[in-house]
Image (cartoon, rainbow, N blue to C red; front, side, top):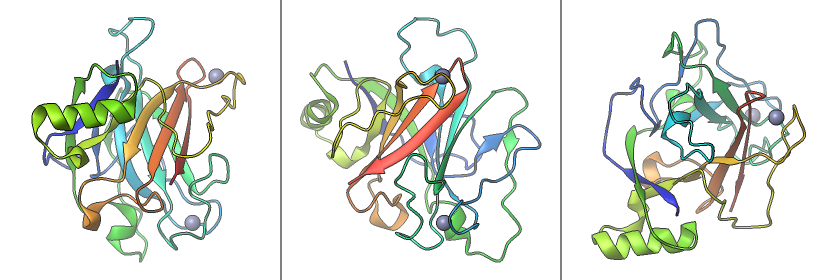
Amino acid sequence: MPQLMIDAGPTAPDALVTRTGGVPLAPPGTEWPTCASCDGPLQFLAQVLLSDVDNSTGSAEQDRGILALFACQNDPGMCDDWAPTAGGNRALLLPTTDLRPLPLPSLSVDEAVLVLGAVRAVTTEHEDAPDYDDAREAWATRTGRPDPAVLGQLGGTPAWIQDDETPLCPGCHHPMPLAVQLEEGPDHYTAMNFGGGGCAYAFTCEPCTRAVLLWQC
Ligand SMILES: [Zn+2]
Ligand SMILES: [Zn+2]
């Protein structure tokens, strides 16, 4: 049963919750990631507490880490930030101990290149539907809220826009489970850029503490 991410309105930019926008939380010493293509700092998109994601093993008690997602917006369209291995994006799977806001890099770049224009908290709801796309539609019909209030899904099966691109873990070479599928967001002015109407997909291998991000449109 798809676990939908529902827009729960604004929250603090440094809140220790699953959210889109704001600033990433990370252990001290973590560096703001940069783009392998243009060397510029990446834009922070979202963080996901993996304890919020349905777990096939049912071991919800253990600390599963926090996922921080970034993609390049220095020169949109030029750095292959859609690709899982080109270095134009980054997915960090971090421990949840000693988290603090990651300082913005002290560079002369527009803050809009580094952070989104809105911070959105997320609540999750399970919708009884065969897949994510059906669940999104069913949720909107049932609640009377517009479907852009659905920000994505946690875990489950990716609803691919193009071909199945499930990555293999760079560590153990097994197919990686989906951690989160993200919509661009309900407001054009504060949306993430996944090519216009696209979705991002982040996968994690918790035993290897590896994560991979890609997007399609
Ligand atoms: Zn770049
Ligand atoms: Zn692995």
